[in-house]
Length: 157
Image (cartoon, rainbow, N blue to C red; front, side):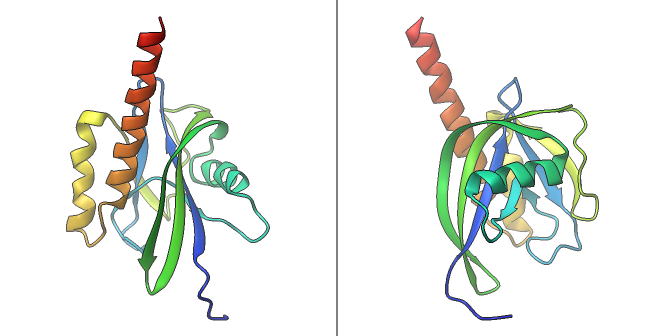
């Protein structure tokens, strides 16, 4: 493998349901990065792939759902893990499929939850497990965007 100083491009899908909850899934204890932590759907952008293509692929691979619509990019951050820089773009998205029954990659994710704006403190657990507040910050950003959009719809009526 060739060493590179180029950051690894990452995407995250902050999947919303009709109740404006955001989908999270727990990484399995055997994962090298952030074992046992809550995560959003997403991953690395493969060579030759656009960010949107990566979002489509990751949503399908990790849940079995199909990406229907990208609503907004709510985060664009850099982070480091195992000495490698990552640049991640996280998007609020809507999907098609049975939202009550995601097809988790069981070797990678062990459970899932739908998180309301009032429940984001459950994601504090990540920092206690050696992770960070990155996922919580992304979910909070998604909820803030959703609340702002709901406010715009109310004032437009």
